Amino acid sequence: MTPAPFFIAGARAVHISQSLLSYSLLSVHGGQGMKTKTVSDKVLKLANFNLNLLTTFCLIYSTRSITEVSEILGVTPPSISHSLRKLRLHFEDPLFIRHGNTISPTVFADDLYIQLKHTLEIMSDSVGRSKQTNNREMLVIYSPFSVAVHNLSTAVLKIKSEKLNYKIKYIETNLGIPDAVELLNLRKADIVFSAAPVISATLNCILLRQLQPIIVCRKENPFKKTAINIDEFQSLDLVSHLTADEMIYQKKQSLQAMLKKNHISFETNSLMMLLTLLSETDCIGFITEEAFERYHQTYGLRRLTPQFPVQQVNVYLTYRKELEKKTSFMLFLNSILGNE
Image: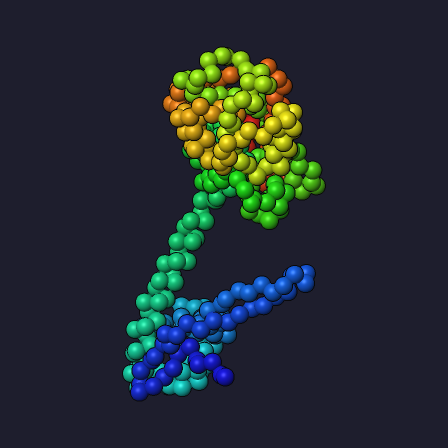
């Protein structure tokens, strides 16, 4: 069945089809089945139509002069006439009729212009917004840690003081997030924090700092001691923080193996939920020293000193080496590293 043209002329009027048909693109991935993507039939039709012709039509309609349009677009008058011939064939209408030294639009052209003018203005505004947005470059940062383990406030102040053309998008990685190498190589992130080092010829990985997890509970917790041994730890319910970082997960598994008992009563990937549960229940949980300093007064928490080893967590900062060529990026990076 032959698809209907994008514009259908009839009774000297333009009718734009309102039906939304779909086109299924099927692709095989390693013999694991078929993946279906739906594409609008209208988008497919536009792919086969030169949208520049519509701009040319609107300019001819506004100026009533092929010569003037050629000067505006910086092309020869014959090329504008060629474009007009294509439009006439497509719409099956003369569009413009010459009267002496000027041209007049047909009724069909009047109707077409009314519809196109609004649509093209919307498209122009969208392109303008995209360009304006892109004037301020987005820096995307991924981190698996439940609190900012680096002083991003200082980095933001650096952006302001140095008038760097950046805005920051900070994403806390939870579950289902690709690893650091994939995030960076696929250009989904500019900076990634991880608990394991990254080795790659195209990436630069820096050991930023070490985090010391500590045990906390609410001040009114019935467990009144300031220190806690393994037996006491096992007798209490534990709230655990979920993360996508493989190294942090392995350290948690190692701790569970040492304790020889799984007494996790609640798991969450939300720091706020974790702190809320710790402040309102008799559960205990691990947070970082930095998180405790920031939130212990707000959530009424106190720390418990473990009488068993708790492994530190390394924090690595990884970015693409190509970004080192940009002075603005290095200024921003140094603000995170503390190199003023």
